[in-house]
Length: 308
Image (tube, rainbow, N blue to C red; front, side):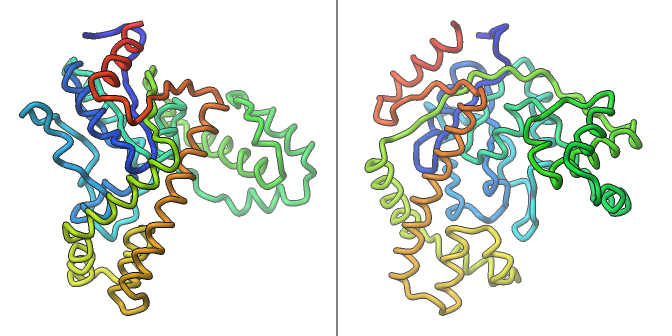
């Protein structure tokens, strides 16, 4: 079933909302493939700690193809620029095979890098330029910005001198590097959110944490440390990796680790929801589904919206 209106279905939601199973099921019905939008599932050997649920990608005995999971080694610091580039490559590949991409994830930054339809370019700092603009007032900087012929005014660019200078730096970079491809394919996504009300979400997070610890999440972190990753490198990945590393290096008891991590994941889920609400305020239309709704009903709703 292909649709002129959308060339992507996005399933987003906070951690432990069951979004992966929904995305895989949708993909199985629309001849689709899943593209992950999770900033930590890109790492190999970091499975339980990042909540990779490989089993979710098997629907009615069929394996649903997934992308951008296990693509870089632990220890590497992957970023949103690389994500956008990798996503666009995979998106083009899936589309060329006449299949429908289904993006699934919780990382707001990664989701927005796609849904905002705006090409990200890693623009380096230009010290001489910054020095030359240092003594200018905000209104003068705003005038300079207006002088760039391709400049698309973004309200936040002129909120402060620091932001205006950065915006000029970016425009200047585009001007002196005409070979940069700033084109984005026209991505038109149906966006669906899965959420549980707060107390249910908390229960799900805690029981999922217990389950992953039972499955050997601490051993996974110990193996990473044994393979030569430093505690600092692992702590960089936050949440599970931070707390488990503190426990394994003797800086926290098991109970302190569990309690601290449990609270940290609740706070993380809350921040994710805040991010999605902000996306809505800025114009992303998110169709919300109650997590308790039976899978059949969720799918029926999504396919209904998709074919509207």
